[in-house]
Length: 74
Image 1: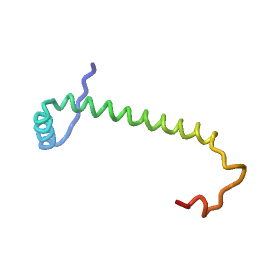
Image 2: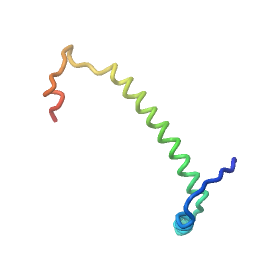
Image 3: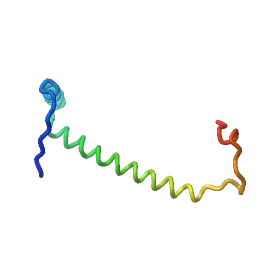
Image 4: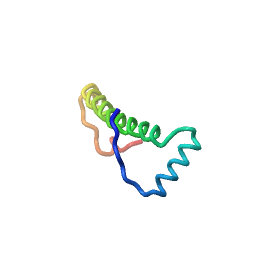
């Protein structure tokens, strides 16, 4: 595992440590979770966009274009 160093306001770091302690975890563990979620969010977005593009090819409109008012109907 690689070590990294961050800089942040000391009061914020101390508050974060207290918060983590109240959740029976560590600031380090919380950062690892955040980092993993951050990366996965990007991956999920890319997967969703692939799915949308794939579905766009399979949606049919019966061979006609919708009018602007039809597209805006709810």
